[in-house]
Amino acid sequence: TVDCGDFSLGRSCLPTTMAAAGHLMLLSCVLLHALLAGPAEGLVRVPLTKRPVDEDGPVVAGEDAQRLLAWRHGLVYNADVPTTGEKGHAVALKNHLNAQYYGEVGVGTPPQNFTVIFDTGSADFWVPSSKCFLSIGCYLHASYKASKSATYKKNGKRVALRYGTGAISGYLSQDNVQVGGVVVKNQDFIEATREPSITFMFRKFDGILGLGFKEIARGGVEPVWYNMVNQHLVGSPVFSFWFNRHASEGQGGEIVFGGIDPKHHKEEHKYVPVTKKGYWQFDMGDVLIGGKSTGTNLPKKYNAYYCDYYTFIQIKSVYNHFTYTLYVLGLCTSRCAAIADSGTSLLVGPTAIITQINEKIGAPGIFSQECKEVASQYGQRILDLLLNEIDPTKICPSVGLCTHSGTQGVSFGIRTVVDDETGRSNDAMCHVCEMAVMWAKNQLAQDQTQDLILKYINTLCGYIPSPMGESSVDCKRLASMPDVAFSIGGKKFALTPEQYILKIGEGDATKCISGFVAMDIPPPRGPIWILGDIFMGAYHTVFDYGKMKVGFAKAA
Image (cartoon, rainbow, N blue to C red; front, side, top):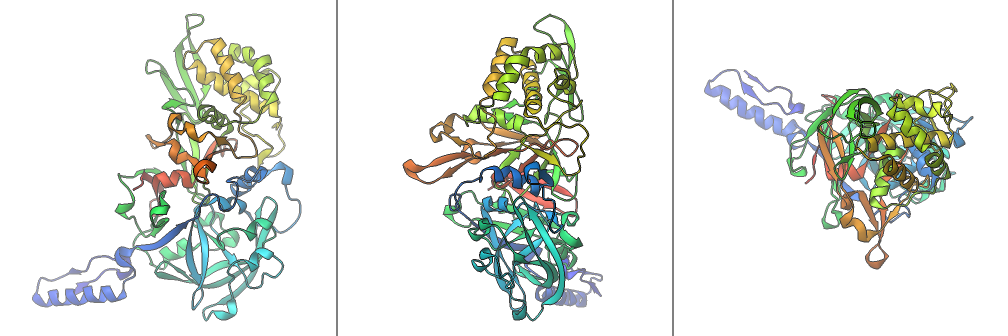
């Protein structure tokens, strides 16, 4: 007899006897395997098309960038908190307009083709419905016609996906979905019957196919990826993204479901465990600008002890010539949360760090009168308190700029959905004070004099990222800009200026835009970074659902 194993998973056929007849049966088994098995090596490939970054105007559309990123990742933008309307999972769809890569799927029998964003930052699958009559955007894109599919099954449950200025709403239906060369049977998805925003009129894709965890899927629907695994359509529960950053030379990229294509990366992957199911979230360490820490950049002779977000550092004081312990809130020095998000093209991080990056790359920010006031009136007092070993989280309350005892971590009117009104202040002075404390600690750790520290804080006040999101830089300065590196799993993943600066237009009309956008998420969920297509383009990204880990390697 011969044990052929599980054909759909591509296991080897092993003879249980060594007789010649066994060899013949083995050959028959292999031939049968070839007839019944899915794609070669259990891999399902979906080619991606890259959209030129300037087709739809600005990379980040004003205040909506902050608002919609907030909604997308479970936050509420205070100015637009909806009080009525349909309940639904918060998804910022406008942000997808900045996603540069999309692919094609088919829904129904025969398949009706749709261009979709494959989004690891959500878990729902939706396409426009032929019954979307009142939204102009639906008429400008492909729409699903249930009557044209032999495998359609009615569900009808109403659902809504919220975003900052409206909502996509519709109802659930069930049909077969073709992804690459395989067919996912009986897949629940959303037929969108309402797309109220004008922004949907000009998008280059029809819908979104979420690749996040089912914990964030609307209505308890099993996501497409889960069914690909459950129906044994892939060789292993792994999918990987390759974004071709030189798309003009050929294919825009590729998603490989079921494994990894070794041609897509140049080195071994560094894996880190998923720390929170929902998004593909993991722990990240320090952020370095030109090789220098944005947290505490300690010389090797100093001792540092880490505990959650706090860093305890023993330093020889250059002021009073005695040894003291400085309690440092290193923001991302010891740990930050991070999300690998294919539905976001940019790099989103805490304002305090983005400001330091802006200063180094020459990205002008907004003039902050609050920041200048904190620097001039409270700068020396902040330094004195730090040198007197005061807990940094208590400094801003002690000088009267914050009404709570602990890190605020909230800026530009954003707060978490679960926060109650327990004294957290959204005052700009409080947030600026907390940033100034962090900047001062960073400079103290580098043995800077007090005068230089105060000047540094005052300089950074001119580089605070604008809530309008977009920051232009001088294209001629790219060669002199520093690398920005992210520490993940103890390894540094650096981005060069050519990778984190987006170029729009050609020739003398070329405009250079910083790929960094600021958004603050307070503990315990934050500080957090969202690593979008800019990062995933430089580093081939593996999403290992079976072992609950994410891997990165230099992309080919």
